[in-house]
Image 1 (cartoon, one colour):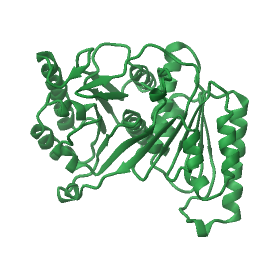
Image 2 (image 1 turned 45 degrees about the vertical axis):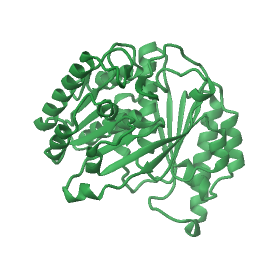
Image 3 (image 1 turned 135 degrees about the horizontal axis):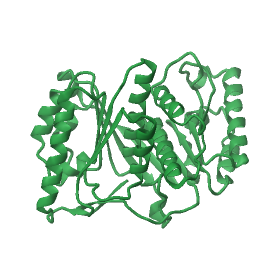
Length: 378
């Protein structure tokens, strides 16, 4: 997680840990909600491997019954292949979209079946993370009693992390949440003019940008598995020099399970970069990272390239914008580029994005003095 502090970019590298799990809510009309949840799962698994503490995860997916393919299916396949003894998955609902006036008895029974599983999992104390994907629209459609759901979540075991996703989170669920990020979509018609696809941007002040990118890495690997191909991923991070970032443990977990598919490069000083106080080394490291990125994009070797914290690097004027635009315009058609990070002044390459979600922070437990937890928060 990166924190904007006035004129600089502060990259969280806090050593303290908390033992209390938090309630996360990701909603909004923008892309990245389910991806963010899976990214948090990957980070938690990575921390578990790093600390020799087993992280057990339940992925409960409402409104996503069999018979339809969803974007996150491939990412979950990669998780289950890589960590088969850590991931449980339950899907409920019918495989089609429906509105409030189309709700059937079957929909209510399926929602209740999923909720019964969730209640049992929460009460059991066996899981460290429970993801309830699309719980928000289930509640918005009145398929479950909101008061009961909120009560169970509020009384969860202290260690348990709960993640709820989907549009339309009701006020009572948002109230009980410790973290609430809203994904707001931005449209860029000019991207269609260029005929570009496969450029995704996640920016904003809320939590969920880098975690969404990790979800995309899982998705690329899973797609390769389903097609019996090797889909290679490059994760390139700016402003994250030094050591000790929990993302490293998550990426190490990926590389442990898929050693030939994931490459990771990092650049920058182990320090905060302040606007107006940039050092020569900051420019050198930023340019070094961009040379790696440019060569990787042109090579066509990677299916997915994650440019983590590129936005604040450009915002701090450590890199010029024009070379980035020119490189993105010439990217191979089947290479996906994921760009993350906050920025005060949107760069011109935002206009090339086919997907652009601004992650808006409604609530974050760090603002209430809660110590950040390695593996989930940073």
